[in-house]
Image (cartoon, rainbow, N blue to C red; front, side, top):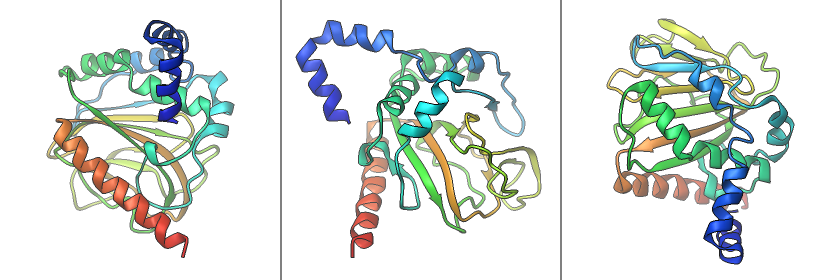
Length: 232
């Protein structure tokens, strides 16, 4: 997919390519919904954006979401997806969203690289209470599960790292729900075990290119190993 966009840029030239990207910007993501959602500061800075995806984009995004057969976080560079999902990736990695998040959380994100992964299959061990790595600055999650009815699998914003029942908010992984939080020493979160399909995309702003390289290596190696063993 990335090779396609590189080829397109070479064919039409930088100016036309930039104009095409501008024309298609925010075909999928509803930036107004993000801007209108208040930031919560306890127990750490976070926000839950309902209906973060434009209603008219839903059908195409569900159709174009990567088909995932393995558990774990998988780099978007390692999967195939359709044009609608590609448009969402452009929206997520845009300067406009970066600035909107920086304004909301009152931090600078200038120069921070991004990393994007997808999940589709959950194991019982997934969702255990944790904080995100200190190499991450901001985490952005969007869920893609239509008509989620399972009581498990709801993301919980937790007060501590030991009690899954001590939470300030529980967020169902429903289609179009976005969770954004600042990575802090106490950004505890998790969910009760669920096994099977649970679709999400995660984008992180990272502290630097070195951190991005390490994350990409680990996630990429994991994806290759899963593909290798599944083919046996």
